[in-house]
View 1: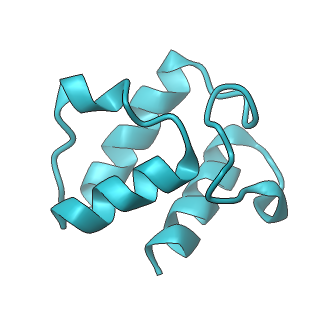
View 2: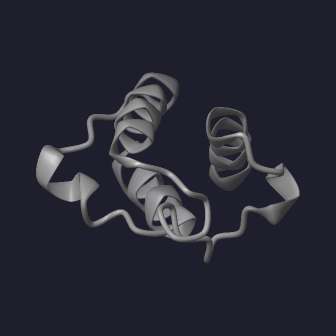
Length: 75
């Protein structure tokens, strides 16, 4: 459930094919996200899932799986 929502949001925001996004996809290297994309994505995820992502945690979120696991642990 979380993965599907995250995948849809990332595909839309980063203009990539949703089918190409896996839990192992790296945000910067594989999905071509830049720091601005990541910040917007984090804000969208916070609104969607009702969580707060601490600034020091953002840089630790390297893959889609990292994002999904963080959301599941904090919602």
